Amino acid sequence: MSDGIMIVLIFALIALLGGGTTALVLLIAKKTRERKERAYTAETVGTVVRVRPGSVDRPAVVYVRYEVDGISYECHETVKLASELVKLGPIPIGQRKRGKIASRVGSQVRVAYLPEDPSRAILADNSGLVNV
Image (cartoon, rainbow, N blue to C red; front, side, top):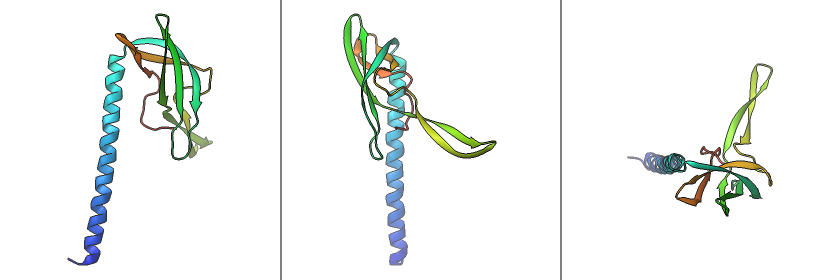
């Protein structure tokens, strides 16, 4: 086999391994979120108390304070995105990404928590894999 073909095969293998690893990580994250959504059956409303803005290489994170039985808790999550088609008349010209939850300090968000341990919580409407 020529050196050129060997180099192409090696780079193809590296690309496949990277893609496979990424797919595996995303699958695990999705299954973990689904498990939490089934187990975290109690719900309350929380308030966004802090936002760490995102950038090109890091997602935005919201910190939410909520109360259960008179005890205050805080949780945080990266903000997931929903895609919205942008049209010029009937012609699609792009897409706009919006956060699935409000990400302004003072905003109210739904918090789902584990009934037997309210300190374990997720932001109920923030499901998905794409981060801001």
